[in-house]
Image (cartoon, chains in turn orange, blue):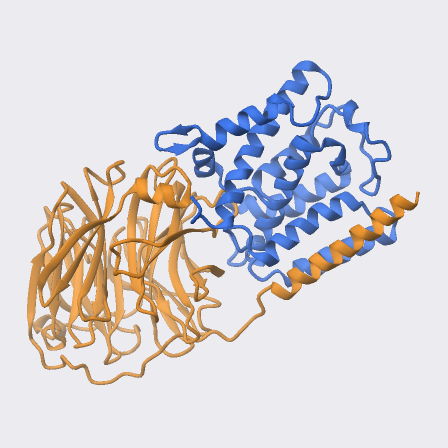
Length: 386
Length: 221
């Protein structure tokens, strides 16, 4: 009887201590702020420079590029490449570009390497997203599929101290309760003022919707917020900060019946997201890219067609995304596919755009701020849909 | 291998325990009697799952890719079943089984699996901000203690989950993932919907007073 009482008392003590430990560790609500730089004149404000190069094509198929500017002034571009999308030989290819010339190319990550790092079977890789943290380390979020198609995928976070040549650690991001099914990433994260990061992500099993994943400074998930959506599926949010507390997210429609660019806005540091009227820019079922330039202009790359991805065009907004003006057309060929754009701005003010070129390779375009102003920009501004 | 974080080792161990427990469960069913702890039906499949490579990765890696990692509570329950069945907590009473199904499994997994509208903030979202869940747990535990339904073994199992959360032992930082997982709730759902006639629907506060009691049990939890 005494042993029974003692065991009950001991269990109470252990439970109370464990509960207190969990309560102390539980995250408390904090006022989140985006890393926001006030608008200033672009160093390339008057530059009409434009150049494009085709990045090396070591494989028959290439898709879903991501670009970031490294602290040494070079550009790092990553994409997935292999026999075809979803094939077992798909790997993450990377190049470093300096002054418009490919300095080096390497296969940065194979599925076998990731499999060994996360100790899970990996059937295929996809959608790499590269970015540089405050310590200058290259971070990569990459989608992997263990079983099934993209709907069964998960996000992995890798960290490199040598510019993406090798990866020191890999960690699976768990953001879904049911076997962590169907979480994907496509667009760049945005920095938060406290050194943490906000990663736009999405879920596409049964229902497609955008997510905003708040990552701690060590890359571990702190919280996940769901974006609002219209009828149908909306995914691949691209986020830009508009002020220390406000941000805009533009989303890809997954349905051809709603072929527009979706909009969510947050006014509390990404804690809540509210649906806004969709942009009147047609973009049926195609990934988009969004970037806030140093002069405060928002730059959007989209496929403004009624079907297909044969036209890739830039749009600008100088009123935080309320109205948009068409800018340069980058590619136009109804028989081709010019898709999955990604945008970056280097310290010299030059804007860089990478995109999938006919699924055969990745093309990199670099241009000055003044190049964006062309005749088409005088066309009437495009507002939100009622 | 030494570079793997602790969460990876815990994940691999969980897969081995699933197979070991399944082997033990099936052999018990075939033998129609309880077996000694850690018989060959437990350690043989464990070795196979942990070390036999298949397609460049161990079987544990295949299973992790299929259904992910277990919660710490499931890990503790499976460990007890394999190595010390006499220490297992009693099956949850019928009330608790249905409560877990209706108030945990349905809100967590229903919106993902059923074609019902999802809310912007659901039950899983609470796992990122778990203060209300912790307060609710404290109320339930306090009520159990006050009403004489306090079960030390379940308290210890849940304490392991709480400790795992506060120490960050799993890949997931969501509170729910330390306490429950689809496998655990599926088993609870199974025994809720198909209770065995021999099953003792004891109150959650009941305690094993006989260390041999597991020898007459026919199922693991």
